[in-house]
Length: 159
Image (cartoon, rainbow, N blue to C red; front, side, top):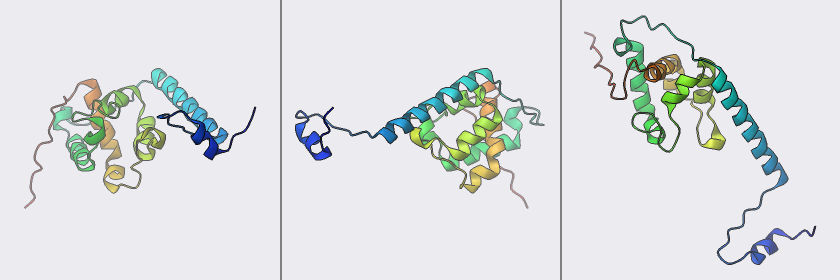
C-alpha cells in the first residue's frame, strides 16, 4: 500500500469531497468508546431503578423535588434535553433515570459523556449539592408520579 502525504491526499480528493484523516489511535479510541457505550447499554437493560422513599405525601409535595426542579431550571438542562427533559438535541433524562440505577445516573450527570456532547457537572456547586434530589425528580417523572408540566411551588418566605 502506497503512503501519500496528508497535503497530497487533499489535493487528490475529488472536488467537493471533504477529506477527514483518521489516525490509528483515533480509530482505536472510537472503538473503545463504542465498546463502553455498548456495555453501558447492556447493563442499563438489566438493572432496575432504585426506589427512594421521599418521605412526603406525594412527589409533587416533596420540597426536595421542588428544589431539584429549581436547580434544573438554573442549570438549564432543557437547552439540550428539551423543555420537558424528554429529549431534543440530547436524549431523554426522564427515560434515562427510569432505566438506570442511581450510581449510573449520578456518574453520567457529574462526569458527563464528552464524546457524545454531555458535559460533566462535578464542578457546579448547585448540581453537586442537589444531585440526589435531581435523581429523585427524574425518577418521579419516570414513574409518572409527577408530569412534564410540574412546577415547583413558590418557596415560603422566612420572616
